[in-house]
Length: 109
Image (cartoon, rainbow, N blue to C red; front, side, top):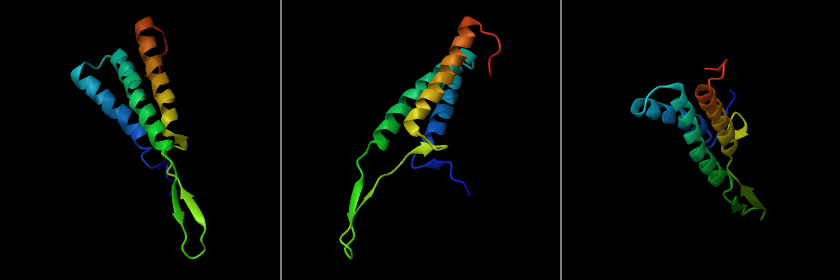
């Protein structure tokens, strides 16, 4: 079995879905609102990923050997750190918003 997320990295996929659903429920389902909701979801993804992935490592001492071990948690989705998903989600949101507002042809939606 291939695990595609580590730690809380699955939130990099859940946060945009929830944000889009909230925007569509309360504001409307126009494509420019979908783009804005993806841009808005990039903010918590960045801050949560940066906070969780920069946490200090925990140190453990092996009583038998006296060796010191460090354990650090990693939060990623599809092997990409959670904070970098903010650029992917935000970039796609910016593309959707700009394509609707500026009338670009060939949107990917």
